[in-house]
Image (tube, rainbow, N blue to C red; front, side, top):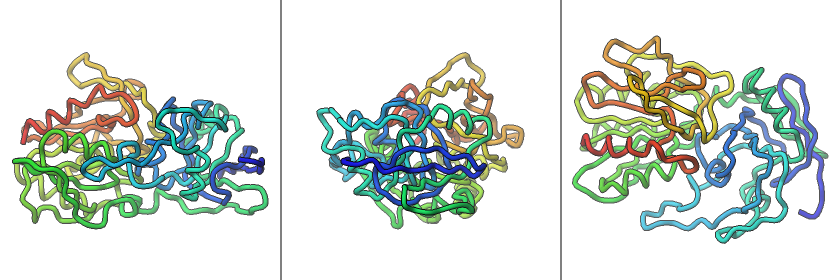
Length: 358
């Protein structure tokens, strides 16, 4: 970066934040959300659950360890990223580190954003921005580099089926084993694939709207994903059909919301969502608490759960639903991310519980 180009973050409530452009110099718009995670920007930026969103990172120093290479494992899955590209619409940070140092780094964050045509803005007070989002809720925003022009109205990403955008387009198979797990790809993170494959099962990854009930399988996994679960009606229909038998079902994040919807419950939009590495959840009926990685803007309404269902986890900060389970059948889910990447791995045992039921 050999020059400073001014940039402005505009919010739909009329507020503006002045800073400097980095990454790709172009206008972008999306839902402005914040994450309090201190590390893990390569994983966060490539998390499909951020599709349609401008991400504000509250940790003040970003870019200091650069960006790693896109090495693949034996299954063709990236070791360092959670998908094959950056999914955020734009990045908002306080202090960009022009110098980076890490033994795995091959390029700067600025170069990576340029390559993938993702705008960024730095030099703004992210603490003030986060307070505004907490008090007023997540809102639409626009990053406007100096010399460009853009204003509201802009498209609301929550009115667009983001899952259809990020889901795979054809069936993909990974690994081998005596047991087969169908994975409904609503925007799956790479480490979820790894967590399943490493437990000795064959994973059959299918698009979000694929009728997997035509396949032979031993267990059903419903992945994380972006946006509004109400726009995934066809997926809910397929899950509801699968629930007619007793094959195990495990859902994560969007998967929790879709499983709940298939069971008759409803969802609602959170004021500003949960996006961090330090969300405490408690297993209902116990005093066991776990620190979890989270990234979601919608939640399940516990009051709408049917008689056959019960909450499995509850958020200790705001009391919202963090997972459900069926009282008699092997169906359960987590709103948080047991696979982490990035974040704590306290709850990875849930994959063992799922595989143990096959």
